[in-house]
Image 1 (spheres, rainbow, N blue to C red):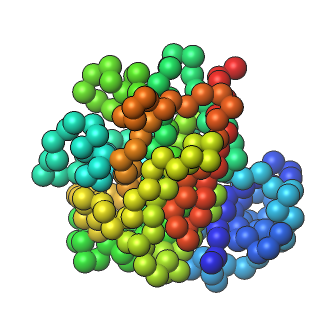
Image 2 (cartoon, one colour; image 1 turned 135 degrees about the horizontal axis):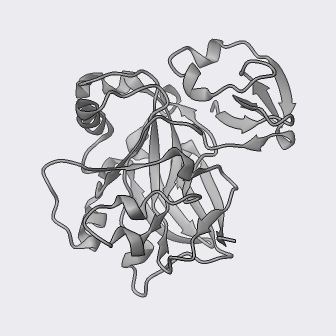
Length: 277
């Protein structure tokens, strides 16, 4: 499968490219910062290479390091609705996350000193390639550039301060996103891919995407009604049941842990956990 990544070059500039074995085919403008989201409206496969760099010589960035919007779907699997004790509503629950909370594959998830309830949430990230407003469900797939694993790391202590999720959902260093974007057209059976989370190798979440309450076209149609989606925007599509906060006993993340989010053929995101220095 084709894998598109964002990275910093050895000279420190940002770019994006295509993985080919042990090398990265650089697709960004030479000698300057270049970002994947600015190319998503074009045909990525047709972009000319500006160079080739050894994979070991680049530093991964989040798949889209600078999305204009990160829209997160809450309570999108019945198992998660049940474990939270909430009612299933008529419409999706949508909250937001900021771009500066994102980290790349391999980068540490950071537990802040204000939290003793740091939690994982394995998810499928949907990356918008073609913008639009009031997108009909029947047209939604044409607006998707690709997919990547996502970890909606959550500071549960702060999430529960009040009825709004945001204070617990966008702390720096908590949103794992990567390692690569797989083009939408190369995932033949998206619904059959399983969202799986492992903490220190133990499987703690495992459910097929087909179990979503609101499927991807429905979510895109809903979100594009109240915002105008743009290339590079990210929709984190929701987590299955099995989050650490609802396990008995609870399973909260601590320094030294490793969290892996796998989404079938789309790939595996892996992040160690550290305490904020």
